[in-house]
Amino acid sequence: MTVLELEHFRNILVEREHLLHELFDEPDACCPEDLDKVRTLLTDIKEAVGRVENGSYGTCKVCKEGVELHRLEVQPAEEICLGCITSEERGKLEEELFLASKIHRALLPQSFEKIEGFEMGVRSKAARIIGGDYYDFLAAPNSGDMRIIVADTMGKGLPAGMVMSNVQGALRIFSETIDSPSELIGRLNQWLCRNIPVTKFVSLTCASLEQGSNASNRMIFTNAGHPPGLLIRKNGKIDWLSSNGGVLGVHAGFRYEERSLEIKSGDLLTLYTDGVTEASNSNEIMFGENRLAEFVLENRNLEIDMMLDKLQTEILRFSGRHDYEDDFTILALRKI
Image 1 (cartoon, rainbow, N blue to C red):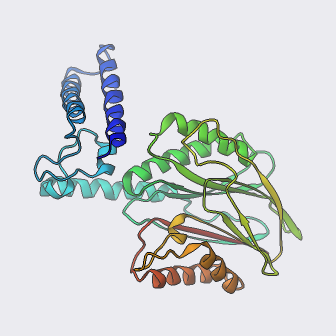
Image 2 (cartoon, one colour):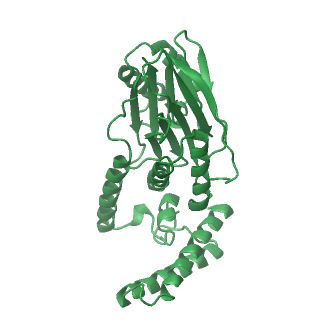
Image 3 (cartoon, rainbow, N blue to C red):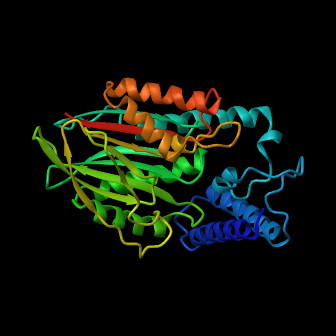
């Protein structure tokens, strides 16, 4: 474990120790039985801080190998790796992961929003039981536009899923009063900087679409350190919608810009996470943005669902694997 990781976990432990001590300052906050549990937790935390200071933190006390970092994010005083837990503990953990997976899936849209003047399809798959990808559809409060969100948190599994659940909750609250994509993302970034660990960050793209069956529709686009959106015009011209701001959760002072453009009949917008373009084969060659653009260009006249299914098959064929190494989300939207 690196020095930065040790310092990160020490900060988590100290913060939790401080919160537990606050309970003793409020006599009516806990019953006597719960206060006994608090005392036990304080002892565990104190011992874990000691292991940080002597350099033995994160070592399994059974096999002497490392405890999984994603588990330490959730239970920072843990001393047993997954390979050494008892069968009873494993069964309980599997049950909890199953329930967490159901909650995570419930956070994603259960049906596609209908955006007047457009047809759309989405494919999203977690690399583990719980994923860190997120997509959503958020109506603007005043303009009538529909904001399409695609986001990705650093890492995979339960910690990434917990961060993304916070992103979803915050976005849905902020979107009720904020129209502008750049202001919405800026507000989210400030909130994340105050509420998530510095070792976790989120990339996100937001496309605000004017709804309606006009000949063309306005789109306002903001990208916070996310892979560039791909807009293929009806005539085959490719327009990359690149990042115009830093990733979320790193620096509260980041400013986000907006890019405005027109989408006309036959134009195809594709938003995705890096699980698409960073899928690699046995030679460690990534699928890449250019290969994605070539595929979408060649198949842009297919029905959207058919194109997305074909793309999933192509990425697995390219990688030579039966499943995805990273969380995978891709959303395609065509102007009718």
